[in-house]
Image (cartoon, rainbow, N blue to C red):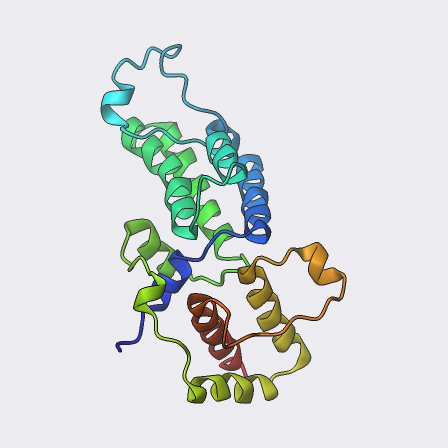
Length: 219
């Protein structure tokens, strides 16, 4: 079976409670950054007399609506959130044009939001990978398309982690538990968790393996 593009793993990360909390924090940071507050609420196109707004902008989006959606579990996968976050700013740039101050506000807020998303510890991602997710350049994975880990791959994970320092191991474990949906409070409680290679979600296990390999490259 062909190797699956890592961007597809990132894009189809299920949004757990831990990830949801982190995304809400990012929304708040974007709203508080410079002119980010301009995008906190829906565009009041009627009051502003923007009679053609809905002709130009087919799917309005704003930070307040994005926050409401994430809190109400409207997004199942990470790519849905990423694309809606970007839509806020591309909508503004599309409607206002490059000679308008709001175009500049949107461009600055877009850059800031994209950078913030690459800082998510639970979902490591580069700006290049994020750009591909925004553009829809990835495969929407299903469990049927992903084969279970082989014994060789499981041994590879064990070998790589055995050579890591404690901080690197902790990052891998945090990533696995976050993806699994374990809350930060549960992690802090000191409960013991085991990676179950027989019964855990295949997508989760393959994603965990990719994370271990990434951390191992750091030396």
